[in-house]
Image (cartoon, rainbow, N blue to C red):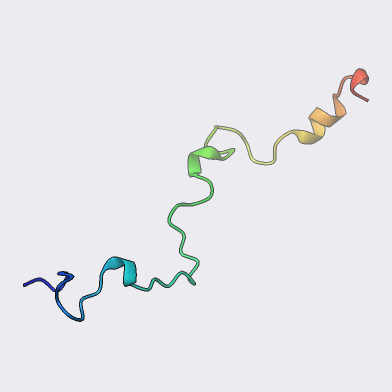
Length: 60
């Protein structure tokens, strides 16, 4: 006889099981390696300063 059988006294189902959710267990990372600047083939650091300096005058 199985201990999972609900007819057996003292057997508990999955709904009655307590689950500890206090750990910060990471299943999947926030960002994958191929979704980074390096993964896209770009240099880190970017060119934001150059882009801001080259803004068209009508954007101001």
